[in-house]
Length: 497
Image (cartoon, rainbow, N blue to C red; front, side):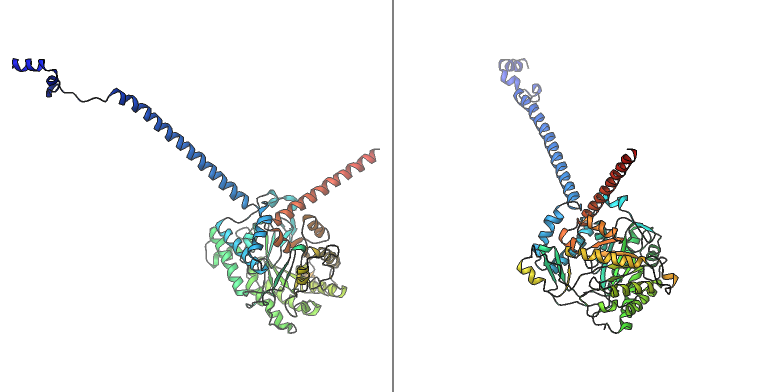
């Protein structure tokens, strides 16, 4: 044993390799020294990467939020200066552009990406207007023709008008006139159309409006059945039964079928009554269109006797509507029937029948005084001006303004003593035709109208047009108040002196 230990002591290598003297190997100092900085670097890199990802993610979210808020705001200039030219470029035919715009707005609304009014003018007290005893948000509306089939009334309400008029709707489906039937006049910001009241029929529109009411009822906890529909239409939701939005009204325009002979007044009356019976339940106002220039024999119905007979039938059908608050009735008349005899006859028919008001203006068949001799349009547009159809555009404004004044003066004279007292309620007047800015809206209102409606101006101005008109109207009213205040101060100073 001693010898064994002696050998081990004489050989240090053997001593180190002895099993009982072995120890666990330790890492070299160099490795330990290099491990700590590597760990610190990885941690720093992880923190830096996380911060970088957070910054980029936040920036991207902020960019997307800003983009969403910008492109869905009616104040955004892209709606006029980018979207309108782009739609026109992609759709050289004006009717294709119309359909494209309607479908796009419909899809965007479903996705929550539609343009909407976010400015304070949407609830500007200075623009509140009294109509039939209720307050509506503003005196600007959209005329019929933009939403012919009642596909996008809610998307149009989101653009800021207080009135949206859908249609015109005929009793039975009809295709209208052959294409092409819509023509642009860009240098004039005008249009010529001869659609001819293309329609899917009253039953189709009624179905679409009924589904809209039931969807509203479901979303507000009333259910989805007929009983829920009735609750909403009877005012239990606290909104107008047509617009389904406080401070706004939905108008539905109706007309006779093209194949219904204009001289068969009973048949014509049945056409209008049929439409009212199907659609009045879902409208705040029913509009009787006897002024389209593209339906044969329609404008002859503005003579006092046939018009009275037709309107009397429509009023009766509206009163039978299965709803607590019955819809109002208005009649839309042509700007071309402008002799004293014609206007007096229309006003007499309005008093006799008991309708609630009149819409003055539509497209015109006349071509006189529409083109300025100082700045004539291009040769192509001069040819287009000869197309059959109704013209609409800024050049119509003076004619519309003059007609509003004439109709308002006759309506304010009141009915003849032979008119029943039940029909003697004051008549409201809406105006449409050539209105392009807020100052013109103000002129129309001062002339005696309650609502100024637009159509062609939106075609060229885009989805921000209503907001622009309301802003300009507000500035016009504000300027007048300031000017009046200055006059009051001047008179006060003069008095003191």
